[in-house]
Length: 302
Ligand code: NAD
Image (cartoon, rainbow, N blue to C red):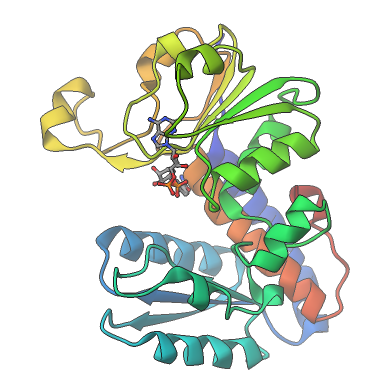
């Protein structure tokens, strides 16, 4: 029987735990954890994502400081803003919502965020810590996938895992995290040939290609665990392929894959809420570090 890997439910459980941790230690710390989110320009999806993150902060007791910066601002202006936040004692985490407007380069702006407040785990220093298995903030999406696999006790050790996608945001850190748990990991990407032959070996298949509906039954080993990281608005011309009212789909043709997989994440309600939950975890971890509190969430950090 197919197991639905319910990220929405697990994210709520994690939020309860964070709320409890914050409630227990806020007096000792003399302040709540603080997360600064920078949204640059008017990308409509980013607006929704930032609003969801603000709401999640509010639910658990993290203070959120959001700056909405106009898309014609210079890189210097944004870098100076980040430098101010690096120094701000009420801010434990800084998140730069991606993608940036086309006129701005991600690299120099992201690297201005001090590694200590890099709650997205994208700073080279923190990615280096992941490579070396040292403790540090981890990229939220793959960390959320690991939390989901662990929560449902999906065996990882000695299993074949295939990750489709090699981005810094998802694919690469995902592969490293699975490897750390002793999976044999293959990374597929846009130059990979005969993709289905590779994915059919996977006990765990993580799909982060950003290609709507690209993975179907022909890619799946019977009983495999399938993690669909992709998230897309369903274009009107494809709406007929989905049940009425459905607005989002993933990289996986879920109806089809559900008939053969052993476990599957839904879209929405799978990886998305876990990404937000791990952002909160990274922020609370950073607060505990800054305020000299005990680290109580390390079991959630892959
Ligand atoms: P990206 O575009 O940076 O990377 C996509 C990767 O997929 C690339 O490495 C590319 O080589 C690979 N790829 C593309 N087409 C392929 C193909 N046909 N076969 C094999 N590999 C192929 O995207 P990203 O930032 O890694 O995000 C991937 C997807 O995950 C997007 O749909 C994004 O919206 C989604 N995402 C979701 C969450 C969430 O919280 N649910 C978070 C981050 C990203």
